[in-house]
Image 1: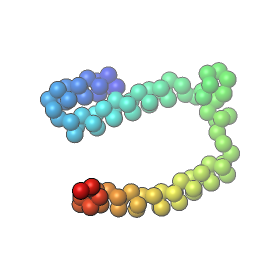
Image 2: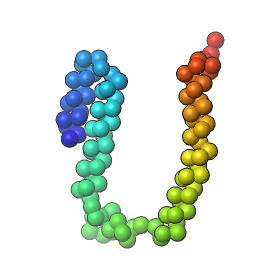
Image 3: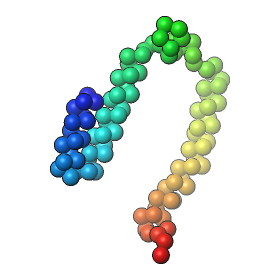
Image 4: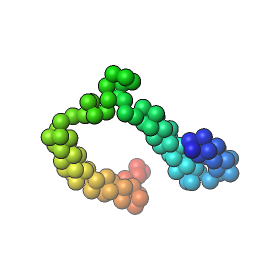
Length: 94
């Protein structure tokens, strides 16, 4: 999948279809990462440490998810506002 997406990206760039090429290039990268993860499963360190053994305790994972959610609630509106300001041209230097 990664090879096909990479080749398609090159074709799209050659045809100057840059907007679509970005997404197809991202697909190529995601396919490589998924392929690596599938090849590693169920090991974190081959024949030494499994994913289950490497996982944090449940309470730590839950605390991390709560912190991630709270951070997203604070950060996402600020990023959206920054995007709006850039789109309006308010932040352009004169």
